[in-house]
Amino acid sequence: MKRGFPILAIITGLLLSFALYEALIAAPTEQTMGNVQRIFYYHVPSAWTAFLLFLINFVASVTYLIRRDVKADILALTTAEVGVVFCTVVLVTGPIWARPVWGIWWTWDLRLTLTLVLWLIYVSYLMLRRFSTSGQTPVLAAVLAIFGALDVPLVYFSIWFFRTQHPSPVIGGGGSLDPRMAHVLLINWAAFLCLAWLLCWTRYQLELVKREIEDAQARESLVEGTR
Amino acid sequence: MNYLYAAYIATWIIHGTYLAILVRKYARIRREMETLKK
Image (cartoon, rainbow over all chains, first blue to last red; front, side, top):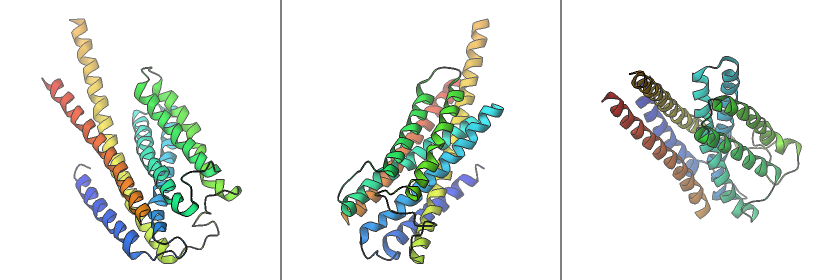
């Protein structure tokens, strides 16, 4: 896997550059919103990536609660952290897009509010993991993650079942997206998925080594204590 | 056009900041490993 890392990093870099070119230059300009609509190519794939990472976090958390598998716990931590990064991108790019289109930076619309709540849940999850000194921290975090994951379908389906300020889903929601725009959207999503994979893999390895060091330090202090 | 660039730049600042956090974590772990080897 060590050999795979530079290859994946190069592929991700190339794909992100190509996706940026496609989003800024190759994609057709939307007639109503103009160039500002191109924010869509970063905003939507970031949201999908964050949802996917929170879904993996949910599965890893449930696995940890059932099997007490340390690797599942590390995967849960990793996906929550990278998921928060992508969710932050969604919450920052959304208002920047809303200002010229809606005339406001933010509105307490159902989808926007639920996305903010989702972000706050996972930030509190990371705070819990960072500052709690209890031996039960992974269990408490896993339970919190399960409740946090319940917000993901609420965010996703809020625009299907409720009348909101946020536009309808572009795929599968009756929206009519230009095939060239859909193509650019999928390229950008593929690039962000590669980036997410790279960040998760790096974070996972760091956490694995960190825990090995902590175990070694604990063993060392135990040996010193018995002398 | 300014809003478009602002959104793209903000995205890369967020990812860059997270990458910097990972690099700092990596440096700290390396220091701890060296201390442990001594």
